[in-house]
Length: 168
Image (cartoon, rainbow, N blue to C red; front, side, top):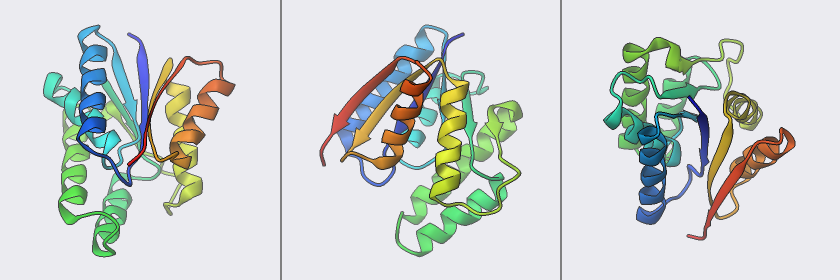
């Protein structure tokens, strides 16, 4: 099985980005391969959701979190309260991650060392995602720095990189 890291913007997406992510994931799963995701809203959520639609047992997905799931869930609820994301986005993401944990606990990789979630721990998570994958598919909206970080890390590891760029 070949593993594809899916990296993408969480701040803003549109129907085109979502369609492209879901189409790419369907093709990956149809080949019998899997995805590696960061468990965030928008692109990561779309990719993981599409994978779970095809493979409810979560055998074709690995999700790396920058901390434990309880701390991550609290972080997303806090971000919803701050208005950075919506409450439905936070709750849908948390439910998705809990589903993965129940379906295949090995598919949810928690970083138990981190107790805070910030740019540093997100970029550390990017490293783990790229290391666990054979190839990177990036869906970069508005030159997202987090996606660029994943692209640069994959290229430094001489892994194939496909970048789809969007301006929204």
